[in-house]
Amino acid sequence: MQALRSKIRDVPDFPKKGIVFKDLTPAMGDPAVFRQVLDALHQRWRQERVSQVIGIESRGFIFGAPLAYLLGSGFTVVRKPGKLPYEKMREAYALEYGENVLELHVDALRRGERVLVVDDLLATGGTAEAVGKLVKRQGAELVGYSFVVELAFLGGAARLAPAVVHSLLRYDA
Image 1 (tube, rainbow, N blue to C red):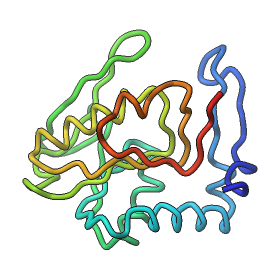
Image 2 (cartoon, helix red, strand yellow):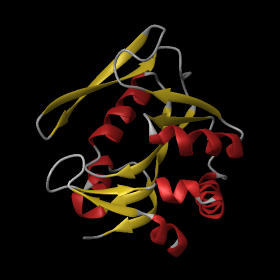
Image 3 (cartoon, one colour):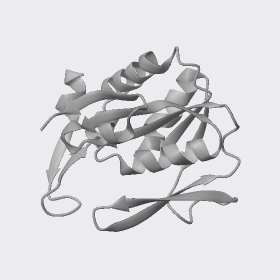
């Protein structure tokens, strides 16, 4: 994963002062690194009988859709309010200042389906935790969470426990 690490760009003070944003777009733009990331994600989950992959808006779509293809799984999306056209269920979650909401179509998952939640980056885990709640409310089985990058010092994996949390690259500080 050294090639991946070398392609992640730090952007200071984005989206607000004091935050160092981990920009994965250079990694996605490098065909060899992008393939390496997808191959590694596939390798981790290929034996888990995943029937649906959920991508979290929006960068989770970039990694989730091709991973679903490689796994032979279906793919569905969790979006911000007002983006899904059909009947949906909502889950609110806390942000540092305020609250946000995610939505999933009411018929996106079937009872008992084995679901993997995918996103580009795990920080505090609030967004992923909300998606896990949506999965469980639809009666599906949460197989785990998969991320390209984890900011381990923010404690997101602990927040998602006892679910399986997999990250290709961790930043401990």
